[in-house]
Image 1 (cartoon, rainbow, N blue to C red):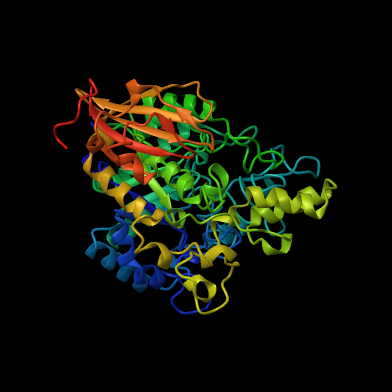
Image 2 (image 1 turned 90 degrees about the vertical axis):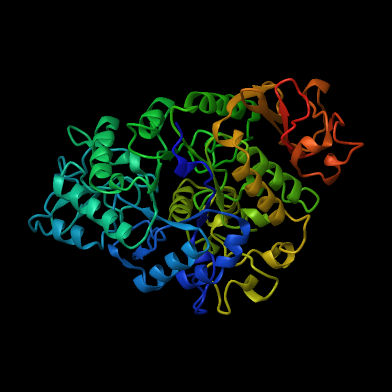
Length: 554
């Protein structure tokens, strides 16, 4: 049975560096987040996931931690975090921290002691001798280059899954596992109510003859971490970033009785158009493949596990640019359609900051505008392959994580109300028309659509415990599915295109009062509620009993 703590969660992801700057140094911070707590409470979210706020040299914007017990001074202090936790709790909002436990920064004290072979840190990382003067056998790292990097002090190579400045921890060392459990326990005592574990399915590794991930070891290590930390408090919510997880392993991670985590992020949906993979050439998003994957995961996890549902995050381009339309006529419609599609699914919905107002990709012109280490590494790689500047910028523009990291657009003031100082990353020029100030008092805005959607999601139990059925699975643009239990059902319609469709009468609501939400305002009008014509990017959710009669509970 689904744990009660998950039933009404709507989690909002904050990228602190880009959310709100309180001291005008151009970098968002913890006090900036606290200053907007009324906004977050008004939105209706229940938990804030903060991407890493720990001390870091920022090679990968915080995902290279140099001290798990110290807040990055750019964001504030531990006292500032405590105040944020208290302020959030006063609004019935909890805080989730992002724990980067697969690797650390090469500036972490543990790594510095390990490279000096100082006991007991000698084997805290994965070290190997070279072979005939060359690096050990290995694959390409995620951010480019070889996974092995030579260290001049230790005279050995260390392993890194991501950047060379992010050496992987050796989880086969018991003391590593103990120290990481200690970190989790420390922050639980400070009032943290949730943890997102970054790249957690990479922690289990066979070390010989070559380094490769081992899912059995990952489960073993996670079970131990749970037992020694967050598993001691059933109220703590956990989610794992498990990019390589299939349905079988996701069930195991999140089994309601024996799983190590409450939910996982799986990436099969997010990888369909080739973003941030291979040659970085964006491909058409195949809706029919998406339907098959959604059907596979929704049925496969139904009451056998749980997932976090997302279409946007700090790691991907903006969802309205990627899956919808940036044009003024379709921005609201496509963005609200995507939200409707997502919120109707089984699983906990995640909102990435700015998606609720329709923030879009930045209009990049030059490589030197980018800040993301992955983007810069791939720009160098593409240049070595002989690509010209225009083509490199095009590929980065379609794929870069920096698209999601531009400063939050609060108003049409200078720097979009994010800061009075020049921001660390340029503000999207469309902030004059896309901002909270413009939308918050407009009942027809995307922001207020999200507020209504969140309220409905919390109130209607079918979102938590309804089974799933895909309808019209072969339509290449129209997403239409049903959530049902006993004699009640929800039907969700989402048109992913500018095309128009005619829906069969048997799939239409029987009464305008059944419509819970619609992104075309006239859909709920008496004369148009059952209109079979589905317009560009139209979406709506309606509630019926199993035979299609008006739901008496409404």
